[in-house]
Amino acid sequence: MKPEIIVMLTHHDVTVANAREVFAQSADLPIQYWGFKDAGVTATEARQLVDDFKAAGKTSVLEVVTFDEKELLDAAHLAVDSGFDYFTGSSYSDDVRDIVHGAGLSYLPFSGNVGGSPIELKGEPDEIVEDSARIVARGADGIDLVAYRYAAGDPVALAKATVERVGAQNVVIAGSINSVERMQRMQDIGPFAYTMGGALFEGVFLDGGSFRENLERVVELDASLTGAVQ
Image 1: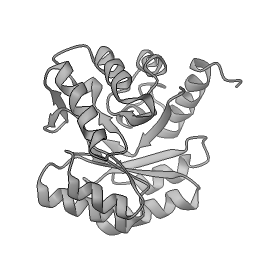
Image 2: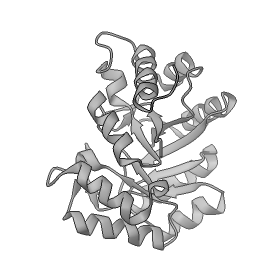
Image 3: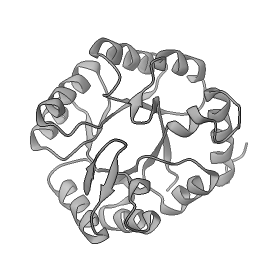
């Protein structure tokens, strides 16, 4: 399947201060999924940004990077109050599942032993894959796999094994998609979606270019990688 690209208005796991301005400058590009993290924004700013997404006809994604139980529940309520479509990240929680499902959001928590800042993924590959299956079996809509934050093994092999175990439609791959090669790997792995944020702010696809110019280049690359007519 052709993966969707989720553009994250974040850098170093924090939402950028000028997220609304950055989105406004790129909202016309053919990217359906846009998101940001719970870190770096107030509740008011989150609602405003989600409203911007909705006004542009986009699908909104919150990725949560806190692992404190109270903060996690606060993030769930933030997601509901802000009107997000997807709640992703952090550890699996029955309470969070119930809160976000009750409001019609899709729920995709991290799988495996995830923590730290920047986020890291630890554990044996088979343990991470089985944790992904456990999470889906408990009622999550899928998992958020930080494959390229996995230092103990092959991130591509891990991602492929996870997709095979729980189904491509149930996997989002998050973090560090920062090259044409890694974009190609996403086509090979075939998850539902993958996130991209820091690479656009750092100009890795068009050296010296703006966020918008880098995203335009990513759109072109994505079309060429999938054989679409440009």
